[in-house]
Length: 531
Image (cartoon, rainbow, N blue to C red; front, side, top):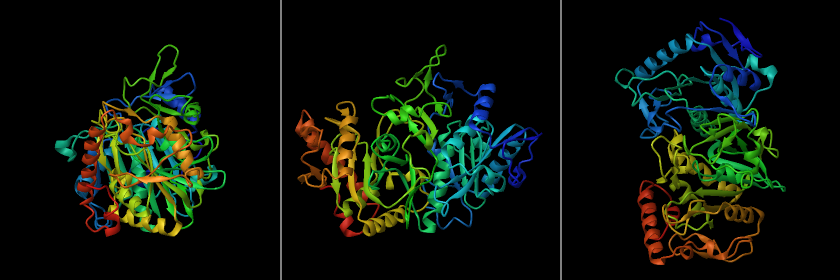
């Protein structure tokens, strides 16, 4: 057994209980990992230089298989329930022992990185993989340290990732063959039974959602960009709502596409890369993402021609949830280091499967808090295991699957930020228009871009607004480069009475969801739809 690579660490794997009997590759360059992955048959080289990997049975996250260890240091802080399922210390120790034995007997790839672009709030993350392509993925998604610092970088949290380690529910205490186990006491994440690389990314996001708020910093499931005048915009939303697409704007500089934090000094990216959905990706509509598909990029589950090695971005033969992982530097106008000031605009993105919400509307501070707590959207096919068509969901803070603390912790922090900095808040529907799923069509991306651009540029500051009769939000009567009839969802439906029925139905669902926030301020409760 040998320690190989450019930058081995003085903090060896022995501190994690791993005593390797095969080679360990430390902090390899992307080119070296490409070579290793191709040599080991882990992927194929596409004609544009990206590597294409398949994740097998699991092509999305497995939220029902994620557990948090019920241990003393975090027990009183975690919001236990369906999202944060408790796992006993004893069961976690058995899984940990299996993981250690499994990893100790095979070649390993180790990468040391940061989570958090702001040095004052970042943590050091170590990822240990049994495959080269997963190690490349991790290296492209997190913040790379300076090369000379790697040897002395002590890990704060460690991810042990073994897709080939299959759990046995009968003996391991899991729900299935997959397990994602977070232990805030030992600062360890175990991932087994799934090759979907997004589990690595989201496990560390969950960790940061535990660590940062307890340090007075709001962690957020949002993308961010900045205009020529230094105006920062945040885009909240679940996967498939357009965070990556809308924040990758050639007219604005990208801060990051998915995970950010808001401190007393401004916002910063938690990651160092992007993880973009690339189903039906086109140069015309998403030029920055399209241009990032090149050598160094990891593509998951895209269809590739076996002879020409050309990628078919339109094919969903494997999954709708095709993905591209690449470093932030692959976006030409990215902000690096990805740190900026306080936001001037906050955009809540919702994929409305009912097709009744306005495509863009302005929110009062109370309405912003109402919609942040509600987190209404639709889960898009492929993002999670078992989701094959859009499903209506209320995901608190637009990121409930990744929040280990009580939702009110994040909501109270956002409310305080809004009061302090007075950001303009917008609700943008990137879902259906002219009818719900199966009847209407997805909102035209060209129009959505025009609406967002108008809001961020101030072009809507002087236009007239009218309140939506059901949802109460302020709808602009005119937006540059957008047909007026598109702005009123009722006018896009062939049957107005059918629209009225669906709008009332969605309003009722909002009301039912908000009953769970019985301690919310009366002004916030009153900011919801009219039932």
